[in-house]
Image (cartoon, rainbow, N blue to C red; front, side, top):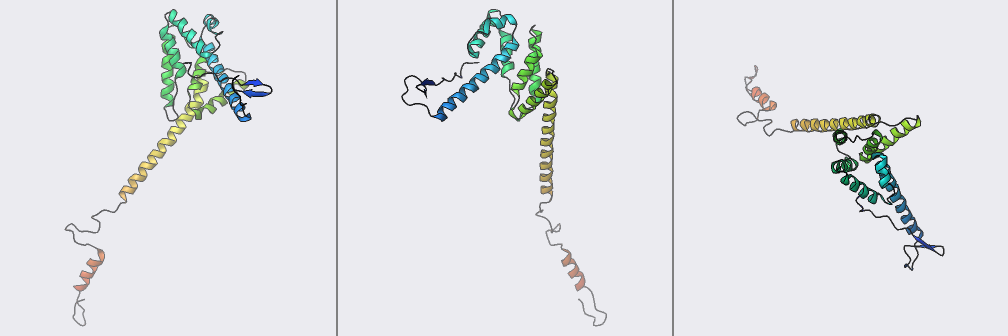
Amino acid sequence: LCGEVKRPVAPIEKAGRFYRNDTDVLSLSSEEHNTILSSLDEFELREWEIRNVVYQSVSESTLYSIKTKPTTHEMWVALCALFEKKGDVTQTSLLSTLSSMRVAEDGDIRQHVSRMFNVVDSLAAMGHPVPEGMFVAYLKQSLPETYQMIAINVSASVSAVGQTLTVNGLLKPIYEEYDSRAAIKRAKVEADNAAMIASARSAVSPYKGKSQNGSSSSKGGSESSRKEDLVCDNCKKKG
């Protein structure tokens, strides 16, 4: 959206060979050609995803004003200018915030979703409610990579029965997975703490085997002392 990522330049074909531009003398290798084509495909896919989110986010009249822009960056610039002209700068800022929100792999999923709901509530309070389908799209793209497959599976399951994925339908399995991981993490921390406590208790004390005055108090020493005090009934000798 900021225009920092430029569209890759498509290779130019001349006499059955491909070149980066008209001035290049050396043709591209097969690997170089495929790399450029892959970059183009990825760029187009990202452009389509962003356009899809924006198209679901604006009214028909607004869409008519921006959909002819050749790139998402130009479309976004036009959208921002349009809303600024209407005096809806805050709304544009909130939409931008909502679309850019992300949560890290080890982040708090519930807290993250709560913040997204706060932004949606703010937009609704301004008279610009976020459509549920658009919010679902924002939630999907904000999730960590390890949660993406859950979102894909639940979307496929809902589509297979001809239904539309709702916010609650998406969040239910996401919350279940997050809570499960959090429980495992807590159990591991508790087990580690218990092991540390047990290890500390089993450590040998520097005072073990000593009496209060510092002398040895072993069992063998005491028995030996008592044996020396005994007197034989036959020979009348000690020991």
